[in-house]
Amino acid sequence: MHWPPNAGEDADPRHVFLNAHDVMARYGWGKTKGYQNLKDRSLVPAPVMTHPDRWRLDQLLAWEEKRMALAEAAMETLVMPDREQATVSDLLPQSKRKRRTA
Image (cartoon, rainbow, N blue to C red; front, side, top):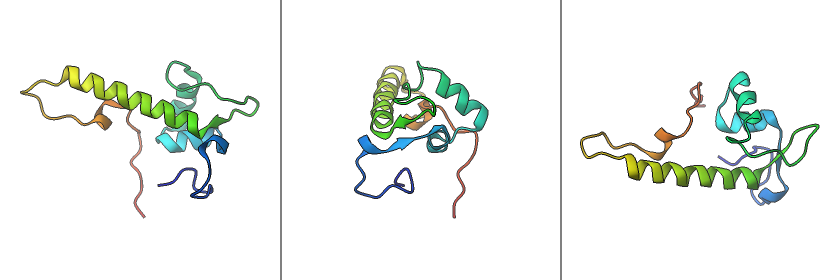
């Protein structure tokens, strides 16, 4: 799925700005957990604009890639042969809600 939904396919991620609601929807966070995560600068990159807070899509994509690389590295070091095979998505923070299918 292309994010945000109202951006065109040819939209440059450097020019797409997401507000707090959009970021929380992107990661499937509820309101309380979403605002807690957005305030935690060790978890989510700082917004590029304040009042109102806006995050650039390209920075969020870079942050996602960094988290995926860290998760893959952790998975490689922690995998044991007698354990069930884990996926990278198992190591990332999970959404509280299940996505609806249309």
